[in-house]
Image (cartoon, rainbow, N blue to C red; front, top):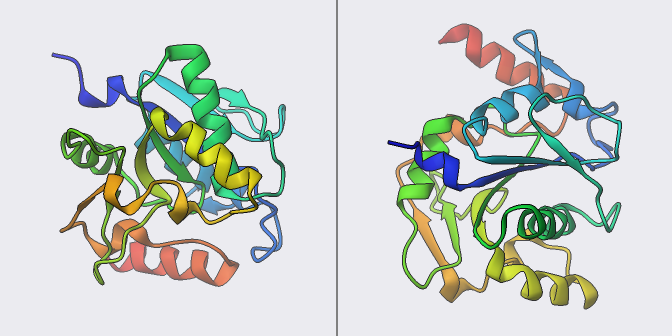
Amino acid sequence: MNDVLDGLTGAITAGGQSSRFGSDKALALLEGRALLHHVAHSLEGCGLRLLVAPPGKYALAGWQTVGDTRPGEGPLAGLEAAMAAAVQLRGAGWVAFTGVDLPRLTPDFWRTLAVARTLGKLSVQPLDTEDRPQPLAALYHTELLPHITALLDAGERRLRAAAPAEAVCTVAGIGAATFQNVNTPTDLAALFRSSKEQ
């Protein structure tokens, strides 16, 4: 039986400026591997894998690079680019979308979201320990693409606007460590220390 991940398009947005990090965050090392590679590992079971980044900037075996069609406009623009490429290459379907700054994501995390898909809903978003949806590690259906394009054309840049609230189903009970975010070198050092303590 095929893994549920095979039916998903995995997408990582890596076109950010890493301004708070001070250097290219995607290539920062954690436990000997770049953050980008940690995140990519979580999505390696996806049938199509897309990296939204400037062409030639990163080498990631098994991934197709997709140019960011609105450079500098944030992850919502990255999601738009990933969805457009997914539709072109694979047709309508679900996109597992994230950034390079969540290195504790796992294949089982994505499987949990995939099995939570609900008829009539167009996004599956995990809840953190404070019951807040986490849109930067979520599933989005390509039916949302026209809505996302309209948002961006109107000047909206918040990823949490990607799916109307009534189109979102949420998943609770995911461990806090999953959402350990790396925005600064201090965040990376804290993540390294916590891995040593486990």
